[in-house]
Image (tube, rainbow, N blue to C red):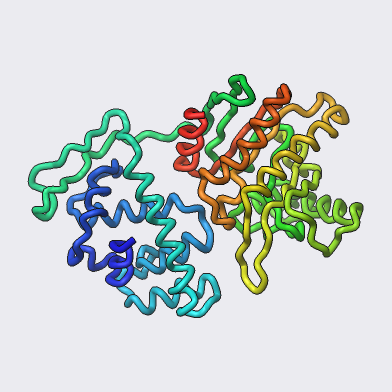
Length: 365
């Protein structure tokens, strides 16, 4: 954190002038594709890699501006970068300095620590190179052969006294195929995000819409069904309790074998802000109700419902670590397995880093 604060004050354009022994050691530890010719360049690359591991959104945008990693900001003064980062959250510079900046630097620290803890990939070496660096003796990692991460992985874990197999998808949620139910995070007002957003709920809304010849939305099918659900249950325009699950059709996703979208209410909006609060207990409660809703609807479909895909609820705008979100989900999955049910469970994440965390934790389980 102390070294990140130095970087924030100086900006990446002045990395060569800073004493950053911890960041230098991490840069030497991490396999950087293509390698870097100097210690400062390696540190900048590992900072960018850590930033890319944070889910896209306000946190990632503000961190990019704050450190000068956003395009065109590397030579900005520290005050200008902080002001632009504060604008992302629409708060005062002082409020950003005291709260949001601490959070985003903490998130970057977490990602740096996780990068440093990863084992070297096959075919790579972390032996220092001779003749490189600035004389500090840290050296740099030899770049590994480039490889694409597996987008579909089978993970086996102990749950409910038996071994269960889960399918881990590492790709955008709208690329799911032949999964009966996809779980979509929702806020307590059941208000879906705009279709141009990058969230799971926005992607499912976008993919479920019916479009005209020019690509324009003709019917917003998922949104329309969710509004109808709210009217039927007498909660239109009012907040529902966290843990509520609203079941709707999947719109055009039905063409890809997705039959239902379960909108799991886990996000509680904060007043006068764009942020949410997500509690792990609400994730567990919502996941348990997903299984209960599947059991209730199962025989209404031919063939019966059998598979469900969960994203890591709360790990985006909710701010939860991947480990916290997975732990909350796993509590419900394990309880369901203990009952002897045989649901086919899928987990879907966008980033390989999140997939690695899931695979490591479930493998340990």
